[in-house]
Length: 403
Image (cartoon, rainbow, N blue to C red; front, side):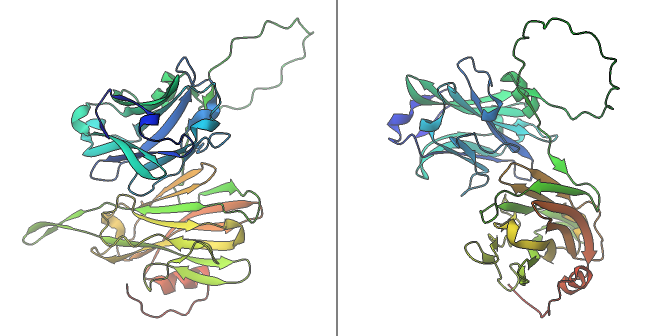
């Protein structure tokens, strides 16, 4: 079913299951743009009265897992999994939004959609493009709402301001990190009668993303119970096409960057995961590290993705990228790496100090330090795998490889 702006449909007309509905969202600018896609679970007054139902990068699941943010899935920039039967009666509407985290505006969208799926089969889609918007920084894409039965509305409404403005619109408030010193302790005063309880304050939520700017910057994230699957998702992306000036004028080239890792497990096992040599790892067996694909052209909007499923088993992992073909160095590719975990932590690193003479970059280390994982930005450049290995001490024997 193809929907138009403003159209409303009954969920029961497209699926008989309220417990296994997916919402897929795709927004394409034709280049890499940082987009924050979120879901607001609001009450009958369209307010976020319970901040646990703001589902975004810092909080990917609702308390009972009725709404789960799953990331990039099968062509969607973001996929939400819904079990409407688990939602509390206080949540009357799920509002799906997208906000730009950067200087772009929504009129620059080349294409986009929000679609509904039942058991992973598409049953309805609302498509849009930049011609539907102007200088807005955010969009309310669609709403799943309860009005005697569950229904869906294709909204497609532009919204001034970004994610913080959306949060305020729905009655929440961004919690800004405080840098002021702690006040000195006041002199004790005689007790006074308790004043009446103040009205409820809007939920305060941190929208902070962690950026590791400099070499040596660190971030730790908590491990849950050992033995569980606890995916850490490493994404490498870069500019899809590069213009180079030559003797006969400019030409556009496609750079092929590869993502990989060297690892040491607690049991002493060492190995390398990379497309070169077709060593893609395993998601179901040791080392529980795998590379999802080899993006030979750089045309995949989600770049290349590496997953560490059992971080409790690792001692150290070195995340690296190298230029396979298409360009001579990292100075023109605008490389960036994003690391996410199941708890909603998002860590961003830009390769902003490239060495023009070297084509291999050790991006970061991921180390197990007891009940925590420590991520350290390295951004050290080498001539190749062997040089990096000698520096970090894994101890491999290297031979030439090909894809």
